[in-house]
Amino acid sequence: MKHKKLANKMAERPVKSLMLSMGIPMILSMVLQAVYNIVDSAFVSNMPENGEAALNALTLAFPMQMFMVAIGIGTGVGANALLSKSLGQGNQEKATRTAGNAQTLAAIIYIVFLLFGIFASDAYIGFQTNNELINNMAVDYLKICCIFSFGTAFFAVFEKLLQATGNSIYSTIAQIAGAITNIILDPIMIYGLLGCPEMGIKGAAYATIIGQIISFIVAFIFHLHVNKNICGGFAAMKPSGKIIKEIYAIGLPAIIAQALMSVMTYGLNIILVGISESMVTAYGLYYKIQQFILFAAFGLRDAITPIVSYSHGMKDKSRIKDGIKYGLIFTFIIMIAGLLLIELLAVPFSHIFELSGETENLCISAMRIISLSFIFAGANIAFQGIFQALDGGIESLVVSLCRQLIFIFPVAIFLASIAKDSPNLTWIVWLTFPIAEVLSSIIAVILFKKIYNNKVAKL
View 1 (cartoon, rainbow, N blue to C red):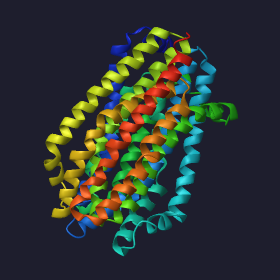
View 2 (cartoon, rainbow, N blue to C red; view 1 turned 60 degrees about the vertical axis):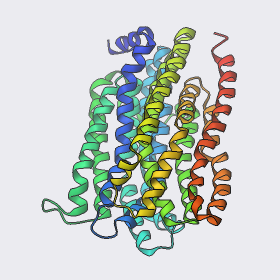
View 3 (tube, helix red, strand yellow; view 1 turned 180 degrees about the vertical axis):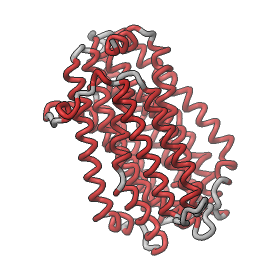
View 4 (spheres, rainbow, N blue to C red; view 1 turned 180 degrees about the horizontal axis):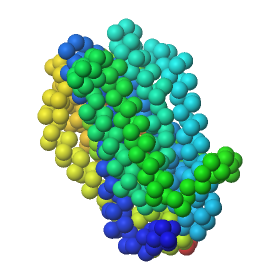
């Protein structure tokens, strides 16, 4: 009965209302994920001692946190698309095995990051800074986040399984539960309130991982309750090379795309620290602020993928075209709203953090300049979701490589060389992002025309 209800919803409901009903909870879920990345920064920046140093430490640890999320989400994206397509084809057994293998992969992902946290976090942080205080803070924070990262790995998978079956409201509730837990625990554990010992940056890490574990537990309970038709128990979790290969045929490009955010941030930290530590702190703060906008686009992308993928499985050309059209339109609306919000509230946003005058000015200039790239960034993100749904993982990967690696680093290195010689022109480095997004959007449009003609026009 539930499978039939899902089929009716995904196959018959008008695409516009379907995308809104699925997309709004996913957008809220992704925006709340951004809460994890900004709440810690807001509280540690207001620590009585070494607040700005702690903020810098979080910036150095952040790329690896995002890499953990990237592996989990990318695996979930692959399982999401494969599961949706299998249900669209009426292949219940394959859908069940896809859900089971996704859970097995989450366990493997956790083990990998557990080992990284124990053995490699010191070297990872040490490569980015020579400041002993910042180094120690960053290592303390990162180790805790890696050693207890099972909440991150498993929630990423269960979130996508719920979304793939049209139950995105439940994944959003789970995300909200974790975010609220994190917000409540942060001041208690950082500052030592209500009888809790004052733990500083370690408290921020513990609050984060506890919130993630809560999200995982709630999502797991919902999965057992509403996804009974794809819950195959331990038998479904037995690794299948064929299923795993199909998951990562879609998911690996998504992992690389997400991981490139970490590579980009890590590389830019190294480039910016050559100008000043204030540049690193300002960029780290802006990056977390802009995530509220970009993650909203990611949330809509995660609605575009199963809708277009399901229609692709049905070979329904009309619904595929509607999924593409409304996906691009709604993403454009989100990014316009985000651009206006950042431009109007750049100064109030910067005042949330206890920053020195130089760092605050750099953060404001970053918000004013980088946010100009939102329109093109939104189109690129939407195209990535469309490519993934049409089995175009490589095309999705190419767009990610362009916007977060191929165009970013050469432009950043060139502009940073100008900023080093002209201290009054440090803001010029922020132009890297609009330039990279515009060039990448040109590549995305070319790739879209090719995949559309090959996969959709011939239906």
